[in-house]
Structures are given as structure tokens and as C-alpha cells.
Image (cartoon, rainbow, N blue to C red; front, top):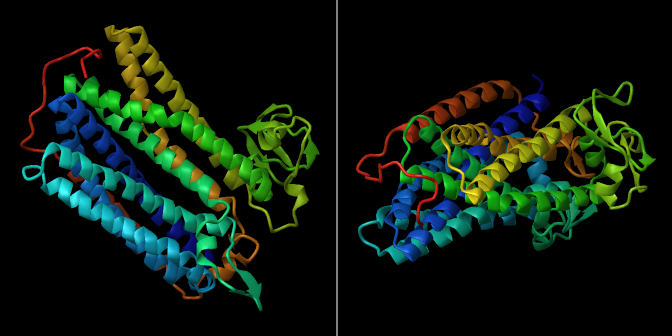
Length: 443
């Protein structure tokens, strides 16, 4: 590989692994807080036992996320020194505040883990609040740096370098709000479905207890609550992109030709040579409606931008479709589950099919999140700082990055294998309800 491809691949692999660890590290604290809150309010000890079981993977993922996040911070300096020289004084504030959030989470997570026999139930519940807030804040401030890369602000250019710096303006860049909100909601949805999948699998294998059904219901309640919020924030993000990142929108939608009343393209394979999307389904005027709320609005296509300044739709459009499709799979299963709960149906064969549906949908939260980040990163190409520095200008000139890539891929694979072994190891010393029960158990 040349340096640019090797550096992008290494950064992409590192982020792909880190996002999984970080996502569950954001979502599980919220579920801990909810479970402890229900236990405290209702007096049902089963929810406290649930939270104590979840704290083990939460602690492991916090530790692994810290390691993978530290690796990423070194990679920024090693792989992208010119970018860091350009942007470090502006995005450094976001990473500094993220560090405070990280240590806040670490302190209260330690209190929660080791305070089981020393703190009251109320104190344990109050420990989960800063854990949840700090975990989300860590993600929000890191996302600020990514938002700045998409919509750089807080400086002016003097002789090719930023001057008159305003780090607070850079922190609160135009893209930050929608990226942070959408990313955080997506983490809660992804975690909810991942946890629900674990319990659906256990029930299908015969571990049909009150505990498992309550845990599955709570996980899907979290996911179901944030699904519509994720959809609304996604629409907000798409509207912002339509106004401020028009090449990215054109690549997302595989929209080659500028036109009024642009159709929405679903699926298919973009062919830049012919300017067509092969095997796609098109909905007339829908892209104009979604982008500009007007059926006859003009939507710029990839032909409106100079060659080499717009992303490749073959990388962006399929991942965008995968992200949107993943949402509808999860929404369909969530509606199915809650409709059956509302109707009070609990018959065996239909329940089994529902659990199989939950298990099938369980990875799509992570798939949607990973796909969304691919869309974000591929959709900004060729820029590392939008309209100020290209990725090729920001990369290191140091050779042999492909060797570092091979070493780090090995590290990440081994780290993930070790994490899975720890997560799948049965937790000892815990007793939970073992009798079989219908879905309609008292809270």
C-alpha cells in the first residue's frame, strides 16, 4: 500500500473496532440507571440483579474502549501530523473536555462496582447518573472534532494556516449538534437491540425465566423509545447536509445530474461512467421533498462540482442505504414486539418467531452505526478539513505504515477475542429467578 491508503485503512480499522466498544459503553450505563431506578422505585430486587450483571460487561467495555481510544489518539499524531498541526489548537479543547468526562465516568463506575456492600441502594442509583451522563458526554465531545472537520469554524486563514483562533467556536461548530444528538441516540438503539438479542437467544435455547423476559423487555423499551428520536435526528442531519455539504448529499443519494424535482434513489449500484444507478428503485420528486421540503426544488448533482472535489458514490451510497435499511428492520421488529405485548398474545409458535425476529434484528443497530460513520467519512472525501485541507495533504510521509497496520489489526483481533471470552464467561455468585413466566409479569 502507499502511505495514504495504508493510513486511511489503519485509521478506519481502529475506528471500526473502537465504535463498537464505545457504543455499548454509552448505552449500557443508561440501562444500568434505568434498572436501578426501577428497582429503587418498585422494590423489585430482580432489576438490581439485572444491573449488577450488566455492570461487568460495562466495566470491561470501558477498559477496552479506553485502550482503543488511546491508540486512536496516538494514531492521529502518527498518521496525520500535518492535519494535527493545522487543527490541534482548535479541536484540542474537545478532547480535553472529553478527558474530564472519561475520568468522571471512571470514578463513579468504580464507586458503583465496589460499593455494592458499602453503599445504599439509593446511593448506587445516584452513582449511575454521572456514569450515564459522562459516557454520553465523552462521545458528544469527540463527535465535536468530527463535526469541525465537516464544518470548520473558529478561525480565519492567513498564509495557508489558521489564525485568530476561537476554540469555543470550533467546539460549537455548525455540524456538532445534529451529529452528537444522532450519534448518541443511535448508540442507545444499538445497545438496546444488542442486549435484547442476547436474551432472545437465551430464551430460544430454553433459559425461559422471569429475569430473561424482563431484561429483554427493558432492552427493547430503551431501543423502542430512541428509535423515533433517531429517525427525527437523522432527518435533521440530512437536511443540514443538503444545505452545507451538497457533494456529500449527492453521493449519498447517488444523484449524478442537477435537476428540479429530483427522485429518491433506493438501492442499486452507482455507475459514474454512465451517470446512472443500475437496478435502483426511484421515487419521483422525493429527494427534493426530503432535502428542501419542496417537490420541485433543485437538488445539485455530482455534475455540479469540479472533478476530484466530490466523494465517490460507490463508497457512500451503498452504506447510506444499509444504514437506512437497518433502521427500518429494527423499527419493524420493535413495532411487532410491542404490538404483541399490547394485544396480550403469548402463544408458543408466534412467540418463538418473534424471538427469532429480535435475534435477527439485534446486530442491525451496530451495522447502522458503522454504516453511518462510513457515510460521514467517505462523504467528506477528498477533504480531511472541508475545503481547507485534503486527506492527501494531511497524511504522514513516514514509510512502512502497512507494517504498523498489520500489527494493529492483530492487536485488535486478539483484544476482541479476549473481550468476548470474558463477556461469555458465566458470572458467578449471582442468583436470579428461574421459574418460567409469561411476558406479562408484574414490574
